[in-house]
Length: 564
Image 1 (cartoon, rainbow, N blue to C red):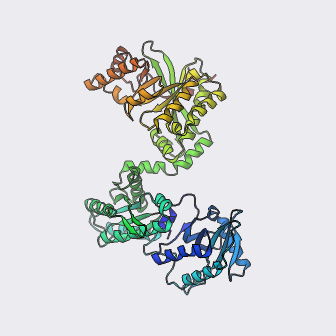
Image 2: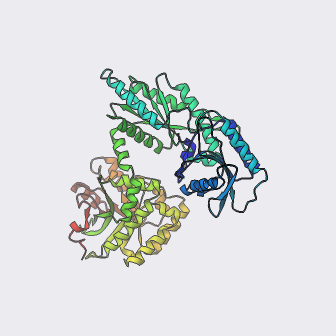
Image 3: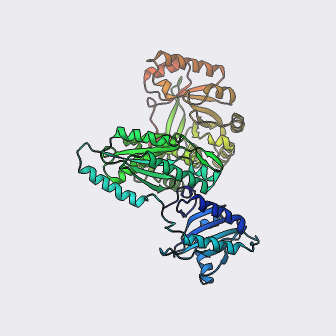
């Protein structure tokens, strides 16, 4: 079974197995000074060369994470006829000293104890003896290092099918629940305290879980700090929610270790059979979707599955890979929303709206894939694509209208927005005065001094700046005071109630008056009725956009935007 702490490490191709006792952890820690190594690792290496880390202490070299590392160790062992110690190199930066673990009576084979050294390090004279001594102690231990006290994923699925079958034999109202748990921020715990400490926290978490689970529950580990609980057939959703709350409370007391008390928290997502899913795979998917939503709030929370959450999770499965491919294959496209001058009723610009038709899924809601791109660090690739293609398209318009492009405020924190805009303008040849960069009010801008500096650089290029979704996000008035803006775009939440809600009218009047005093123009979004249009015109809103004036449409369907 995968060790949860070590399985959470990103970028590794290894399976980390087993949780271990305090005595074993201490033994491995003592090996570091005894061998003078940077890391000591117990490996299982398959005949194919695939390495599985059973236990380790110290800083593992990155080269160990490559499949070729296992093949290198096997080759070094073979050169020594499988007896005694052997040496070799993982890369130009790392070498190793290793010895095989003697076979146990349970026929455990292909286990090796490895000490890793930076290249050029002199081996301690006692290093070989220390490795052999510990390898002998490992061989003498009973049990299988590849197993732990909890069932694994395969056993979990088998029991889940049994529960479904048993529930079907009971009354129509009989149900049971699947609870998917995870230790929050496991990667951070690994980085801060080390893998061994993380495993001890997980071991204590398991002990506490067993103490609160009622009779008949099934508990298993599914790897990476994730656990599955199946409630007995006949358990209602109300009872399950009470159990979930009891599970979350086990983290109210920190784990006491030699280094002190370490706090932790748990998140839970749960689904009920057959109300939330009709089969085992869908039940697992629903619980995982609920857990993902619980984690989104920062951890320490629970969520029950719903059709909406499950569908959204299914859409985002493999979303990162598909999005990367879409950028590489130029499979994204732009739709254009016209911006109309209120007084003249003429189109003065178009807002570029990024869209994506995902193979097998159809057109994905932009708020879904853009939010996901921000979470996984892909938003800069999407913004770059949008900006470059929008400026290129605008060059071919028969009339030199303004082109408005949305970008994420993450560019401000990284101080890369001005260089990007300058590079795109140079590459495309678009006059700077025709470009307007829009940043959503609903996203944090980061440190105000950095954001101000970067926005000032963009504006110095001759490019216009606008705050989008004004009034729906972070400290709107403070941003008007600090940043060099040309326009604010009123959020549709204000516009949709104009003429119907007196408070909405008063807020809109105040914003327009404030903008005029600051010499900033206003554009109202979401205009859908003639009455809204008339009120905005009467109160001096310079520009409007919305379905009353035109829906977002692709280039090829808009005569005045069609490329020549």
